[in-house]
Amino acid sequence: MSVCARPDQWHKNYPIAKGRHQSPIEINNKEVHYDRSLLPWFASYDPCAAKTILNNGKTCRVVFDDSFDRSVLRGGPLPGVYRLRQLHFHWGSSDDHGSEHVVNGVRYAGELHLLHWNPKYSNYLDAVRRTDGIAVLAIFLQVGKTPKPEMKRILEEINAIKTKGKEAPFPNFDPSVLFPKSHDYWTYHGSFTTPPCEECITWIVLREPIIVSSDQMAKLRSLSKNAENEPDLPLVDNWRPTQPRYFRMVFV
Ligand SMILES: NS(=O)(=O)c1ccc(NCc2ccco2)cc1
Ligand SMILES: [Zn+2]
Image (cartoon, rainbow, N blue to C red; front, side, top):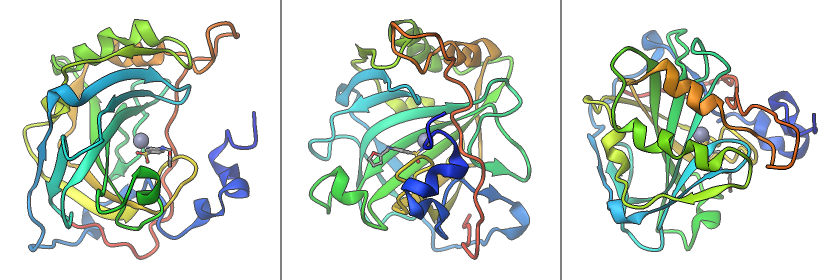
């Protein structure tokens, strides 16, 4: 495996991976702080901003037009609007694990991340270098009998992006159809969960998971991390283990 492949080796190329604001973390109800000044969050997404779906060898990602304030997240812990840039997933090799954040010891089968950046900075890569540059809305995927029908749209495209580097058009999609009923959330300051592990993320982790079927999780696991003409390597277990919380409060 290349030196960057294993999370415990990342710090060799990205020293910040051993920082004090790394993600994901364990969220334990007995340690969270209630902050009544926190507002509800709101997403207003333009379905026409959705562009393509791709397999980058590490995850399945849907990319949106973020050339202006077209699809935005605001409220909650955020100081202003943040532009939706992409969404992607993390999942395991079986239904009993795969999420990045862990809640009171509970691991979910997967986790959906919607990544937004702060347009007060000139572009995404500039925002990535700022502590208030990025906001990620995280939604747990729980395996159950009555899956959310809106997940089907994404999973139907999986066959078109089986191998690394494959991309397909993904028009007319409003990701807020994937949200659970409750908007209750935890929030804390953390990092990217993959290199470069920059500590630029305001995390908004939804308490209520969305239900997916075991077949839908198997569909995600049918993706490959290799390119088309290479030996098959299943794309599974693309989650980072939880990192030390140090003294970061997690707010409700
Ligand atoms: N799982 S996540 O939401 O923390 C996440 C999201 C996006 C990246 N992208 C990698 C990157 C960082 C700077 C430029 O490109 C890495 C990790
Ligand atoms: Zn992620």
